[in-house]
Length: 129
Image (cartoon, rainbow, N blue to C red; front, top):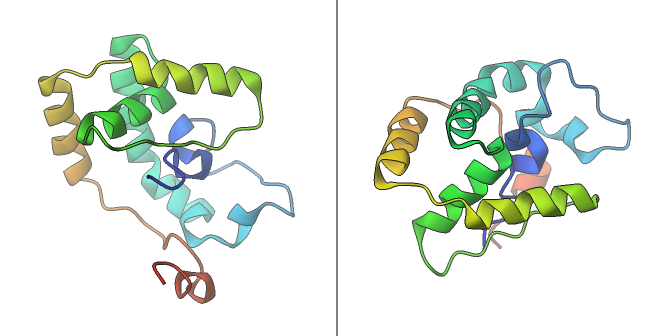
């Protein structure tokens, strides 16, 4: 089961290097959410945006559809707090990516090196235990 399949909101296309999080937001301590890392990682969102525009979908729907296309037993469970996000995310289940779409996404993603660790060091030690 993919944990945080939308990258803690980053893959929705609603966060960029200028986004300011509430002081209590967990992402403030996550290295991957530093302004520099968000700027460097924008290439991933740009890729999703370009595919989403072509498919008349959202970047979140493309990300979820990609996950669903990987294995039949993968069940992404994105967190959300708004009804319209639930409706948007459900659209990812009905978005069917072609073999060419999947190949293009993989080829483009393989050229992108993500910046910033997923968690601060003290929390990373707790992952996979």
